Structures are given as structure tokens and as C-alpha cells.
Length: 192
Image 1 (cartoon, rainbow, N blue to C red):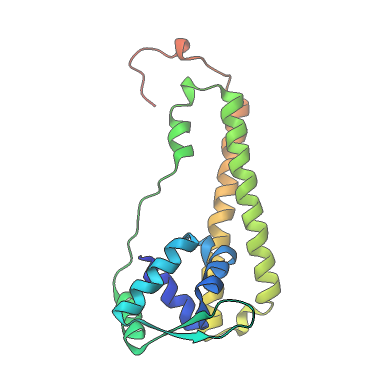
Image 2: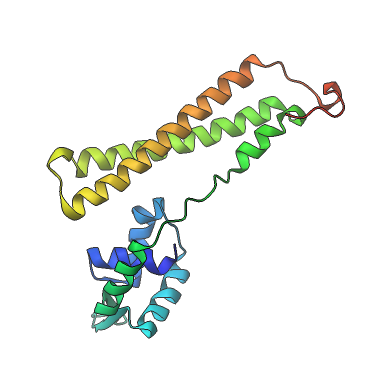
């Protein structure tokens, strides 16, 4: 997925300035696709040149004018085309998983502390998602259209975070049961 598509999705929900988009990325879309503020402004300019968005100058008192972006017909066409494309399944790339593969060479308490740090961050994100779910979607069985679609993405995030927290708990339990081994105790040629 290109940042352009994430911005098109966001702009179909609400016309926004670059600043507003950056804030929304920080608070919602950024959980699933992140971008710096500079990237957002750069891509908005490119999208305007491609005719996917239009921008209207809005005069602000005491501040520079801001540009409000909205999706053009061409942008909606691009979004429709992109949605119809098969999505990239992608491979799980996780540095922590690679470190665990080499745990026989690790300081196990230090590795466990890193796993705990990951667990705590994912648990925090899970709490945020659950707060969104409770506040924004109190009756999920009554949702339809855009609201249903947003809820389904949030549910995907919840399930991913639940799985990661559970996995970290499993790893921590296993590391606590496994006696710490030094690299010298590992037989030569052993593969995990």
C-alpha cells in the first residue's frame, strides 16, 4: 500500500488540511499505517499534481492560510481501482522473533526484559483499541457502511494485539522455565 491510498481513505471520511491529516495519523490511522508529517505534506502535493485531490485555501485570522484537501473524482477512481487489487499478504517481520531464535547466545534475563517491554507496549495499544471500541462502537451488531468498516479494522487491530500479548506471555513463561545457557554450553553445529 502506498501512503497515497491511506490518505485517500482518510480524505474520503473528511476533507482535511495536511495538519489535520497528520494529527489523525497520529491518533488513528497511524496504528495501521504510519507516516511522518513531512511525508504527508509531500504526498499531498504529489496527489494534487496527479489530480487525485483538490485543495482549497482557507483564510485564517492571525495565521497563514491553510489548504483543505478533498478527494476528486479521479481520486475516487484510483481508490476504487486500488481496493479491487489483491492485497499483499506480507511476511511477518519481527526483530524480537529473530532474537528469540538466537536466545541460546543471549543474556536470558535481558532478553526477557525486552520481551516484557514489547508485551507492555502491545498491551497498552490493546487498551487504547478497546477504549476506542467501547466509546465509538457500543452496539457493533447495529453498524453498517463506513462505520462497520472502521469497526472491522479496529477489531483486526484488537485481535493482532491480543495475539501478540498472549505470545509474549507464552515466551516469558517459557524463558522463566528454561535454565539460562551460555554460548559455551551449546554443542557445536546445533541448530534451533
